[in-house]
Amino acid sequence: MKKNKVIVFAIILICVVGVMINTYLVWLNLFTFKINTENFIVDANNYSIKVTKIKSNDWKLNKEIDNIIDSVQNSFIKEVNNKEGELTINYEYSKYNDIYSFHIKSISSIKNIIKRKDHILYYDKNERKVLKQKDLIKRDYGLYTIFNSKCVDYLKEKNISEYDENLLEIDDKNYQLLVFSNEEIYVLIINNNKEISVPIKYGYIKEYLKEPYYKGIEKIEEELENKEIEVTEDKKETVQENVDKTEELNFPKYIAFTFDDGPSPSTTIPLLDGLKERNAKATFFVLGNRAENQIDIITRMISEGHLVGSHTYSHKNLLKLNLTDALEDINKTNDILTNISGVKPKYLRPPYGNYNKNILENSNMTFILWSVDTEDWKKRDTELIYDYIINNVNDGDIVLLHDLYQTSVEGVLKAMDYLSTNNYRFVTVEELFNKKGITPEINKSYRYVR
Ligand code: ZN
Image (cartoon, rainbow, N blue to C red):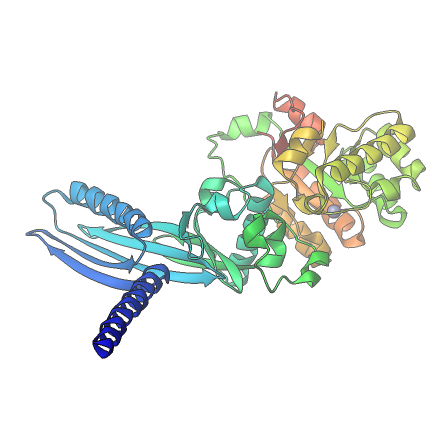
């Protein structure tokens, strides 16, 4: 009898342990994030749909993915109607610590017209949570400025000249497709149905990454901190103007030439002489730390009808300062310039063209960017600078130059001589606003005036 009891007990024990192990395995299976691929094909009379999709063991994620795929399919079916068509949906993913970026791509072809739609979905496998872009990064104007500059550089570097410039406008709608990987963040640009994926190091954007995810980065490249981010905003809007010949002869065209980073006596003085000879006016965005030692030059600029604006005290990237420090830098420079000239500057050119909405809206100044970037600091060649100016300016443009180089001074004066025979007049930024009947607003930015 005693022996039987032991056997029964042993059997019960085995069963209990077995159930526990089984439960644990089920548990483990449920809570270890897994992804598979699922394929299906829809073959109708006039169209076909081929889908390769992610199937995970998290129903919340599956539901989000299905919603996207359903909406893409439905709009395709609606659009294809009785025509011939084909729709392909597939995906790619990449990982950044515990965060997955799922990129769902769909390409439809209806009567040989190809359309592409892209969606990105983020998923935190630790939290088992579907994330939105705003959970990972601060969607900020400053961030888009960095994306814009990196994309422009990348396209230039890869010699991709045919792209829709609207795609790169500093606007959140253009930066919806971000893929996070462990090495870099990728900005996807869909240009003519083709995907361009621009890699950007986390170091450039780390201040915009949100807390829990920001902490996870292993490889923040500190050395990037000190590297300068050049923003080239030479995206020009070509305005189709139907000006007939006689009108063109009667109505002058206006350009505002602007000079940054000075004053520098050896180059600024010859420039002022050249402008005087030509009765041309310009705008100088001076540095506070140079202006305070070049009082005579600032006074001369003003007495000869030029406009003096601020380029901050010491050319710091405003995006790397907190708001208080950025505003302090701006105000300090304004005080210096007011003391020298008796006039409080109204216009500011942020170094590298870098700023964010917060700085702009609290600055009490008007930010002046540019529509023509001569890249004179890189060219250092009178002829190249001259050529670039005469071939790229239009009525209402704001042109970026630096009065630090002799080549810039010679190039711009030569360009003025040529352009003045073509009915161009050279005015300060403020006069340009006047000529165009536009009142510059404070806490706003302008790239051109027309
Ligand atoms: Zn500068």
